[in-house]
Length: 345
Image (cartoon, rainbow, N blue to C red; front, side):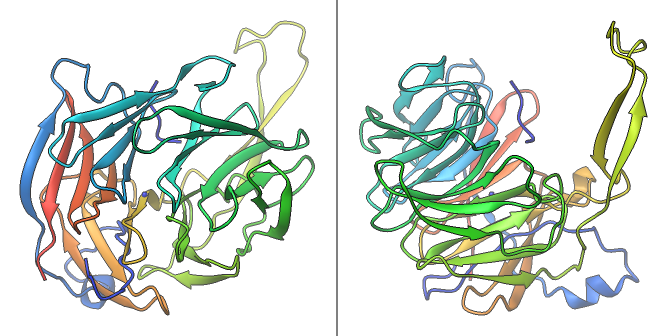
């Protein structure tokens, strides 16, 4: 199943973003400050289909290496591409998923996986991949969207509640009890436009970046949040409702049908967000063009200040930061491929 829906060792936040590709006379080209391009270290290609499978998510592992997520399976790898373990499968039982919605690594190294259709978090041992726990969420959840690891609790989870606009963040205990509840920090009025990517390891917090806006939310370890605007200002788009013809869709017995969608002219902004811990975060953005999927924008974690940009030599679909400071990218053309890059100072 295909999913479309994520350095400086001094404590700077690194956000990698792909925004609208600037033309030669575009003021955004002037605003961007170009840093040295990444240097390729290694290429790992799954030619047999038994290494990465059908991947949609790439996650850095603070213990070293990276994780790959498929629809219902998680694979853990060392940085050289050797596999450490595989966990998860399709189903309704413990350690099984309808569809994996989000995956993160907790401060203690455990791997947390959020199910799209079953309101629960599945916990795996980060060293072995063995099932540790299944934590059920309250049944009134319309959809559990995102995970952020947190200290002394299971995680912070962004949820949609029935009849509500926008989203809510729950801080959830190891037993599934809600110990804190806060509204989302942004002003997006519709759940469609609140669609986001987020990541963090729980030691300092995390970063949330929106699919349809250049706004980013920096989450602190204590649960507080602040909103930062990206180098290219792209507001949340409008949504539109329109009628569909049930007969044309082969739906008998239905007289009318309406759908709501994001303005089709709105540029898709976020493609992937990643972190290697408390040192840096990477965000990759796009304006919808394949050639735009290779601009990396850097920001400082303390205040969101833009620090500069890098260009990859090719477009990619997802990124992660490894614990040694290198960048990992995921790309699928003929075969799924993970590349490891040095980020020169």
